Image 1 (cartoon, rainbow, N blue to C red):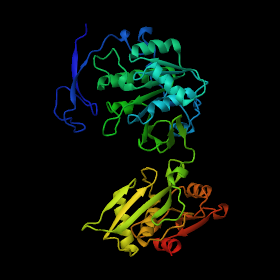
Image 2 (cartoon, one colour):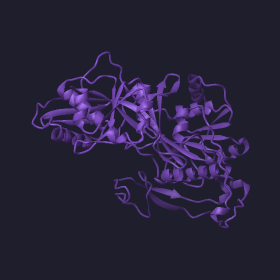
Image 3 (cartoon, one colour):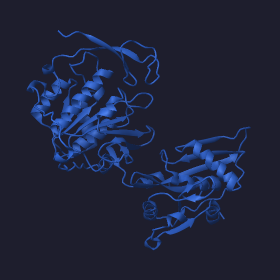
Image 4 (cartoon, rainbow, N blue to C red):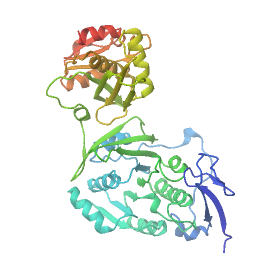
Length: 458
């Protein structure tokens, strides 16, 4: 019998220590170090292909120009949003980790994807729900008949025995925190178990060429539960975000070895499952019967996708000694900077005014092209003059009150034109190489903030 070995792991970040510590030296959290029993059995008793004998893998190094490479076609799903986030489809042999809050819809998303892959053999492994529960959800989704098989198991050794005979083309694991390997004498969900199980699924995906999707739990701080090495091991890390009180969900990419990390997918949670939102600009702009002051439409980019979003501002006289500055979905420090620019360069007395800013739709905006829309909404509320609903803005504001150029202005103008806007204010420095005559929208180039206010609010 192998000698029992114990180690101490941080349940927050996965840091390993030879002795117990009150505070983790890696993440700084208190009382997160726990003792776990680590006992390695013989290789033939567990793991992927452990009963088939040692693999004959050549360890001889090769020059890079001598390596044969053939680009494999990606697997396209019926979910265009997922295809975009993954960089163009599912890569064979990839390991994808999807995290999110409890009840946000992770299992529903992956089950919906599994049912939509009608031409592929899909094995859905669940360690959290019974077969009857999954069947009930599948009937509610009203998905087409597919070659999807359900298996409820938590032992990785039993899973790989079934996988070798079943030979799936797509493997889905719900969730990695419920999986348990016999190679580690620790409870399911512990740092050592999560790391070992993820390593086994990674080895299976790379050797077999079968893409593996894993659901991961998150901590109360919002990060993925388990060791940080879990995110380093996988090829793609997706985060499913949203508010339980709203129906819209956002699928973001925080790591992608096969595509961009700037893409996002938007869904709407319905009783029949998740609906793809192909035109998110329509849901991010509220419907109004009349023009209201303090509302401006700005253009932002998420990856290669242009979005028209609504910026709402409310400016009022401060009733307390210190004026309030509150922003939702927008950087509060950048809001302070823009208020200083408006007061210094524009002459607006905002020092004794309460300013509240909100990005409609629950988005978090970091694109500096929203600056002009933020300034326009603040001044519109301050002067109590409504901005026409058919006007959009796409420019960055500098500390001198100048209007700076932004990237990919063609995509922003085309999106505004598609949604029926009549005018869009851009920086005059964006006109270089831009064919204005090819658009059916009035492009208004400006160099200073004063020109924007004179054209919109006067």
